[in-house]
Length: 171
Image 1: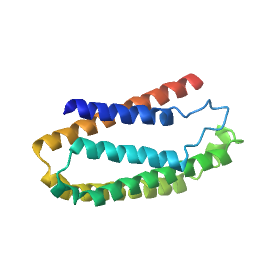
Image 2: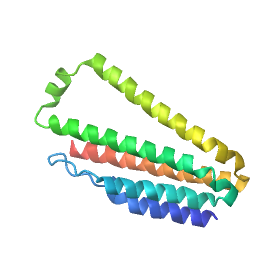
Image 3: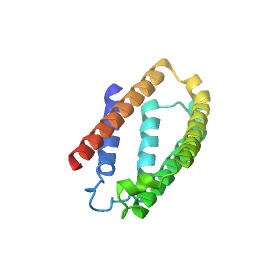
Image 4: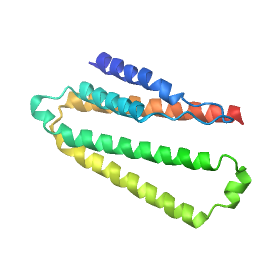
């Protein structure tokens, strides 16, 4: 079973790797990921979780709220990243000193707090959506779910490290 889970995780990461490397040098405008690509990536993530869990017919009735919560978080992430890209494009001609000098720190903190509150609310909604299904999972299903979470978090951590290293090289 672990081989199936590892294979599914590998397929997801191979399919998503072009999106992770869709970054161009800082001199050029970064390539935007299309809505279709975001939707494909979300579909792959959902399919990966569903196939890893191998739910029983009784358990599948708990799945729709989880899928809706996953999709809502993905849509919010896509909107947030698009907004960041637009803001960066507007400020492309400004120097770093100008950007920092024109920043209102209080407004920044308030905006950041609002963003974190929204993310917190979405995460809480996801946890609430998972709760009924999680209570019905067998110990083996819970183990697969934990393994999948660890694999995903490890891969995300590696992607962050690679981006930081590339940013350091670009500087």
